[in-house]
Length: 496
Image (cartoon, rainbow, N blue to C red; front, side, top):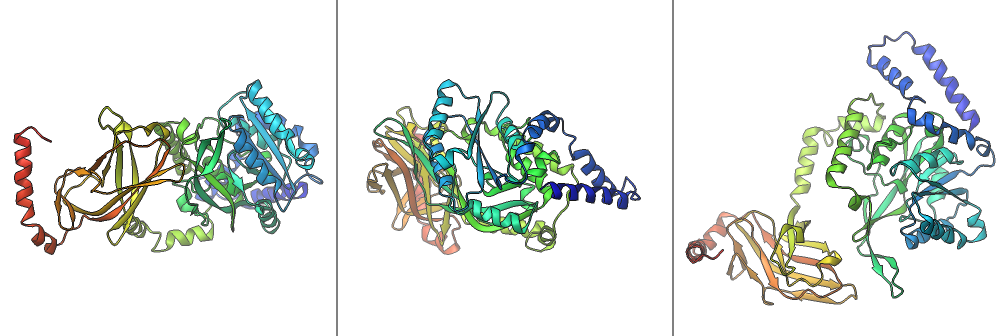
């Protein structure tokens, strides 16, 4: 790695001499000036430089290939155990584990040390445990990258899972494409924290895994939104330790996206088309999504996009082909998005907790439908237990037909309870032979019933038609006047 660094610096000096005649105001001149201002100039890098130099004797020959950096606050001991267990099962053992405790108290520190002591001897020798008591969630990342001894560094959160060939695939790709940032495919799955008989919380899979992150890196897409979970990434250590690409400590969320892109601008990226890890989406446990407010996320997104907008960026040929193709042009993207959105509609589920219905006691999900059939699944928070009824709203607009609506309540025990209109369902539409007709906005169907404890998911299925044809209108022409008259009578009598 030392030779690689010398080669890089030699090449940089040669490049400066070659390009010294380019006027500073040109695009190339400004790009070179940006690189010169970026490399090793960040004040945050200077702050961590002593930590980088402290570990320098342990790098190079004999050092591990990969540093697995795991932030923890000691609040999820069982999940941390599972994360370390997946590391114990790696087919390639050329890694170290740098466990960084962030703002841990004495009890949390003891819990972390107990988990380390539980590991096999060979695994304990791989683990270094350090702590940091200041800063936000970026502080343990900057300290960990500074103290890392591997030529590559991967961030593995204390609730994520890697498969047995995770290190092996990263190692192989790094050998074939040295110095590049590495990106492997990741599956995502919804999980829940459930109480065990001992009283401790244990993780349990709650949904079918999906492959939304099993796709190649796209520079145009990544400039707008991050689609790369950290457990699928490995960064060359020289980008942080030698070039000075550090985590932005003003960010409270999305710091991984900002760091990834600024690193890729310098190193490039190689896709590993293998699924090597699982990103767990917590439905009822604390995560960065629940800890930070929506406005905070939006503010950080705008800040990062503004960074990108003010940067000169080197696009690889594949990204240029994406931008030049009709499929990824603005018009092509708009058509593609519209086509995709046409397969979804947003619907709501309300719970009556004894004080009537309110937006605070509701949730919204996107229902996908094919040929009028739809299915939507709502993961249910624990605080909705004991409700006295549920209401399903199939969107906001009126003049639609709803057929064969069925609600399935699934409990943690695996028991299922099915509700249809015949089970006391009431609605604000009109019943006819084929289903329900809703003319006015805000259609709904409600079931007054006791919601059992341990409710885990509610799944609603049926058929919906919100694009009524002329033939439909002819069939319904006798119904609509009666429905209008009934609605008028209700209003005159003070009913809603």
